[in-house]
Length: 310
Image (cartoon, rainbow, N blue to C red; front, side, top):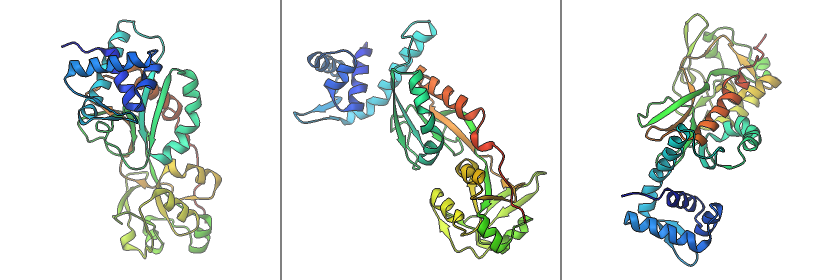
C-alpha cells in the first residue's frame, strides 16, 4: 500500500494546529481540497486520524499513535531527496524541540532570532520545562537533556560538558569564613538538593572528597534549582550548582566559587537527543548544528570566574 506523503504532511500540520483548513492553507490548498485529501489518507489507512465536529478538530487514538510514524516518513523522504541532491533548497516545516526552561531562557532564547533569520521557512515549536518529556510519546524531533544518555531508543550529540561547582554569597563567606579544604565544609551550612544524598567531589589531581549535607547542620532542603541559587545568593549557605546556571552570578560577583579546584565527580553532559528510529531530517540537523556552533563550541559559562578569597 502506497501512502501519499503530501497527505501525511497535511495530517501532521493539522495535528499540530488542530485546524485542517489552516493546515491546508499553509500547503497552498483550498479548505475543500484539504478535507478531501485527508479523507483519502484515512481511507487508505483504514483509520480515522482526526475527529471533526462543527466546532473543533482533535486527534483520535489511532491518529495519536500514527503521528510519530508520519513525522518519520516525512523525514525519511526529505533525507532521501537531500542525499540525491534533490528536494527543497530551504529547510521548512515545524521543528518540535523540548529543553529545560532555565537553560533555554539563559542560552537558547537569545540566539533564536539569528536562527530564524537564517531559516525563514522553518517554524520552531518549543516546549520549555524542567520536567523531562518522553520524546517518542510527545512526538518531539529533538530535545536537550542534562542527564546520562541511557535510553537505548535514543541517539544524541554532545552539546557541552555540564560541570557542577560549589558557590556561596560573599556575605555568607564574610560571616562564616571561606573553606580552604573539603574537610572545612563540615563547619558550614550546605544547601541540600532533593534527597540530601552526598555528592562526590574530585580535585585537580584526582583526590576524592564529598559534599555531604547529612553530615553537617544543613537546615535547608530544596528541589528547585533556581530557588536554590536565589537562596544561596541571599546568604543561606553553600550549594552545588551547574556551572551554566550560576555563570551570570559568578561573573558579576553576587556568588563566589568555593573550593574552586573541586567539582562534582560525575561526568555530566548536556545532550541533544532524538529518537533512534528517526532519520536525521534536514530541519533537525540544521538546528543541532546551530546550537553546537553558537553554544557548544565555546560555552559562555566556561569563561573565567573569581574564586573565594579570605
